[in-house]
Amino acid sequence: MKRYHVYAIINLRTHDAYIGCSQQLGSRVSQHLKHLAEGTHHSSKLQKAWKRYGREAFQAAVLLDLGSISRETAASIEAIWIGKLGTYNEVGTDGWSDTMRDNHSERMREQWSDPVRRVVHSKQLKALWADPDRRKAYASRRTRWDDPEQNSQHSEQMKSLWADPERRQKLEARRAARWADPEAKARQGEKMRAYHAARRARLPGV
Image 1 (cartoon, rainbow, N blue to C red):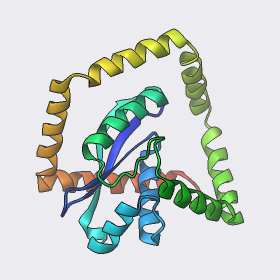
Image 2: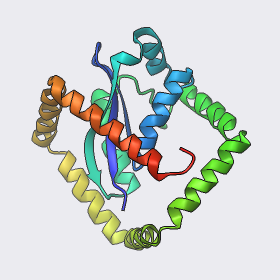
Image 3: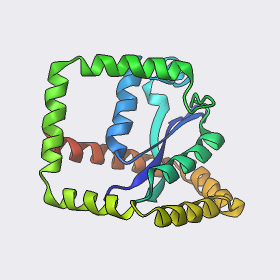
């Protein structure tokens, strides 16, 4: 079962950050970096900073491993981190700014108009779902979250957990200490590179 992770793309010069949350950590971060390199990222703030400071000023990092939780709970936790650190996130009253929606729509139209990309994507999905263990884990997860009582109980537990200011303060202090350490940043960079290399070797067409 895949786990949700809260991640950040951090400007090491200004300490600004873009915050996201995904079950597909490696591919999601790769998408961000690809769009930034192409000048098509949905966050105009992050794109402008990328153009000004250059690739070398930015570092992707995992902030939190949330485990196997519901999408709604993950989104709630992500929102907390965006509120505290997401200076590059462009959030409107309904979650996305108009600029983000326009950029995202345009990028998706361009991506799916490419017949080669559609074929590659189809092959990747078929390869993933040919794994019986993956199908079994997915079915088990769906069955578990079909129980509204369990959903509600888990949601309340997470809300209570993240409402604790002492816990949030400890996490923030730990994060600050980690990113003040050059060796820790280098280790994280190595982990991300190894992750992407393993994923490319595992999936055809990547």
